[in-house]
Length: 134
Image (cartoon, rainbow, N blue to C red):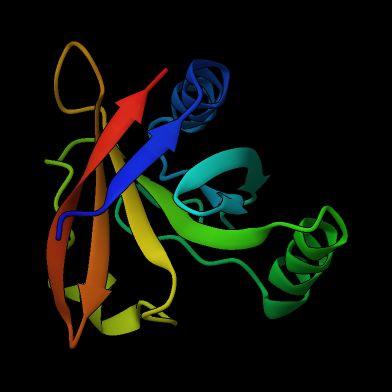
């Protein structure tokens, strides 16, 4: 059965802006909510200042996760951008994805209109999900 994600338009717009504000580097963050419903976006600072990789120290991630849990939400996905490539997980993305219970969201700025994709990650492979932006 295909996983269908509900993403509020205001959160989608915040994600697009976060990516644009970090160009030419990758942006990253967390998406949280429950039952395939995104309720909050948690931008994180890419410590690498790189257009092809992102890294956030464990302490920063832990702080964000605690705030998410305090809101009675769960982490649904790790978000990052691809400033100049398609919104498809790279081998590096797949190998370094930390938790198969958490999905991956990529926004690509390769095209005139940014493209967003949501993926489930299992055994270093990916499966696209449907996103309803509402």
